[in-house]
Amino acid sequence: MAELLSDEDIGKALGALSEWRLEAATLVREVELADFPHAIQVVNRVAEIAENDNHHPDIDIRWRTLTFRCSTHSAGGITALDVSLAQEIEGVLEAMPA
Image (cartoon, rainbow, N blue to C red; front, side, top):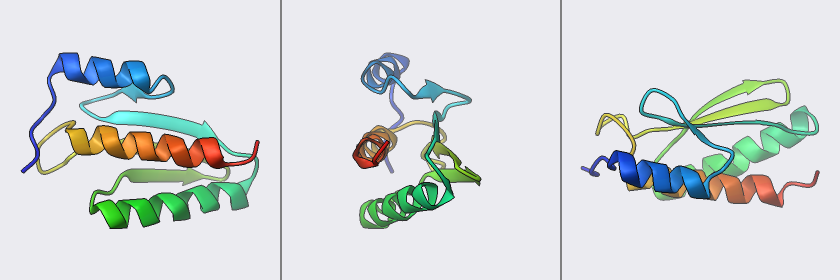
């Protein structure tokens, strides 16, 4: 099982993930895309990454607004897997046209 990160490690991770926040032992990112099809493109790409990594975020889809939540449920909080997944999600979002 993956080990929980310390508060210090989580703080460092959030320093590098400026659009993410800590909420109830979960890394959370909300983003508004140009339209619904773009939002679904992001979800589809994140799904591919998550399947490849065998680590899956919780994703809430509201029209063109996506909310990602990364937490390792089996560990009861945030692990390095969540930070890595958040970084990969950021990469997908950065690659989307504005």
